[in-house]
Image 1 (cartoon, rainbow, N blue to C red):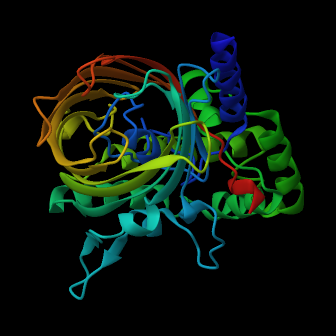
Image 2: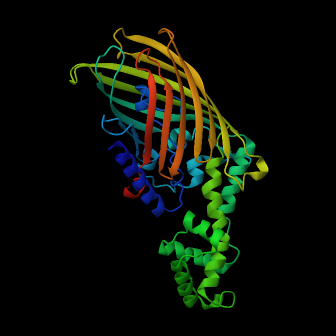
Length: 398
């Protein structure tokens, strides 16, 4: 049954990814976990700085039989915004007084903040049986630093994607496609680049355009020639936009999170104990691809994380206040991530967490994650997690 649920979520994510169109909200959903799960240690990683938190995401670990599920939502994608929500706005790209571009280091507070809710059934130290726990959490990207080279690289890519077309016919034809709501998807662009294939609806639109704009017939005798010229210019723009901007990550990023949970001792809402935690995460991202190859290859990164975490734990018999601190090393190869993390618990014996984890981006909206290792408790401390993270992407409803 657990496998069925995971397969079902992956299948739905696949169906959504095939229908999607390229836009600023279409970048891969890359979050591995959320604060609601991190609080109760039901997580493949305690150290995470997600890139693209979407409107609504579902996290499910080790199936649904124990209710191990969490929801996370990012208000940026839900709250209506009258302004043009361009990619420049999303990344915080601005001009200074000297006319040079810079990236607002605090823009992540607006675009990359989220609220999460989790519900699990799990055995904790001091209890003979599994207990139900409900938790809530919030996190945000407090600070992101891009050096001048990263900022220039990002702006150069974006400027190429919005450059005017080479002639008046293509410029007007693009306006017609926008009016018809015909958008070249990433899949269409890659099909053209690899196989020189153009969807028939674009050729039909080009024929109608030429019938109403005969002054362009000398340059483009039929719809196929016009559509081919259009795809020749737009395909590279779309592929470059889709892959490259999100691959340019800040050299330094600081995330903050806090979470609160209630454990129901007798499975009764009136008999609960509480746990509260807050933490800071530093992420140093080192690009492993040479600068001259960035336009032709997906970026690979070495991430070095540091974390400091405050925990006020009422779940245990003798309520304790302690600190967790440690780090993680992660290798990111486009869709695949390998990581190892170690955290030491200060003020509560010699407890530590030592976990290896892996994350794979199956589709744009679906990722699989797994973890194996040792958790903090002295007993029942084995971590074996297999989970699916799924972006429901309700942006079309608002």
